[in-house]
Image (cartoon, rainbow over the protein chains, first blue to last red):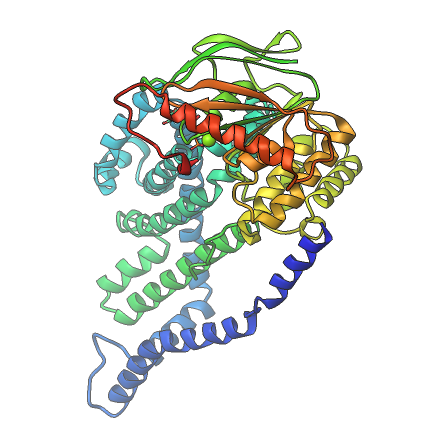
Length: 279
Length: 257
Ligand SMILES: Nc1ncnc2c1ncn2[C@@H]1O[C@H](COP(=O)(O)OP(=O)(O)OP(=O)(O)O)[C@@H](O)[C@H]1O
Ligand SMILES: [Mg+2]
């Protein structure tokens, strides 16, 4: 068998390792990607500074950053960020837990799926914002109704992700587990869970993305703090710089939380053939 | 003794995959099953492995009916079926989780060395070639030391060189532990080289058409005259089994086997 080993080793040695090359490629992509917004922002800044444009409705970047800086300096920005973040996380957590459990129950057998799935698909076709009046009647206008709305938004992608992932687990892989006489519980833990993990994490990221969408809607329906409140406030007081500062913060927070979720899941997915981090 | 007693298998879609198949395999015997594509070889192994139920008849191991996977019976699938989220070592040790870690690692190291992949323990399955993956699958089935090992064309994805050396490993293993081996293969030479008995099957419905006892001395000479003669007899029987099929069946040339 030594001969086989030697031959395999020779094959390995011949395959190039391309990590530095990939890194510089990533750098180039980053520069290219950021080029357009930077050029536009600099151009606008220049135009306003030279008096070619007014910049009243569309403030130049410097003023947006100034507003952001002032908000941060007074501590107000952090209060709003914290309020929004808390809502997103609470709603995301609730929606994810519910979506996971219901998805697992529906995926457990054909009969549970046939009982649960049609109703949930029906509910899913209701635009989630349509629930707002009902949630306000049931839960009041404070945190509860907001979190409920975000949770509903997160629920469906997670539910669909779990159900779909379970449905596509390969019978052949399950048979390997059966051949080694795994119990039902072991089968779930050692075969099913790892098999559905990639799809599940994708669903979580979709859920989180929707959570960020729905928090804005939730904060529009009346809030005294939160980034959504900053948006509404900026509109009512005619402060476009505050609106844009808030939008910018949303973008950054959304990217960061998604990045954290992706990074937290990466160690579990190194085995994946097609694993290419999407950020 | 592994005993297949007049087994029928009809799939839910109506396919008669096995029709009154009868076969007794002695303890420590090597039986090769050859036959054209679709004649029920994989089905037979799945039933013996307890993954599927016979429609009629039953399969027993030392008098015990097999209705679910049995701890003394191992199966090597037609494809590697490695678990992509486990390293090579963890795949091989998958059926040994009840053992303490040190013992498990020892066994895993041993069987990986047996298939020539000792240096690949930390790899992911995606980093293996097809043949390497199949060798890992063989190691995984060997690890729990099954009394009966069912092999479904385990070498068909390998090059002639690797295949020949794995033949030797299977024979080494067999000499050391005397497991019962049931080997499905498309390769008549492989069957003649390894087996004590060769079972020829014919398709639609899957039946055993003839059985050859090969009382050739071991170690065998792969190119010896008696092996050649045995090969010719088996090939003839295969040809015959294809020709004698009932009228109306489409003809499958013997070369397709
Ligand atoms: N799950 C299934 N459902 C219905 N029919 C099946 C199923 N599995 C196999 N068959 C049919 O049963 C017959 C025997 O299949 P089997 O896989 O046992 O053949 P085989 O001898 O292993 O062929 P090959 O050499 O190509 O692997 C074939 O006609 C096949 O189409
Ligand atoms: Mg087969």
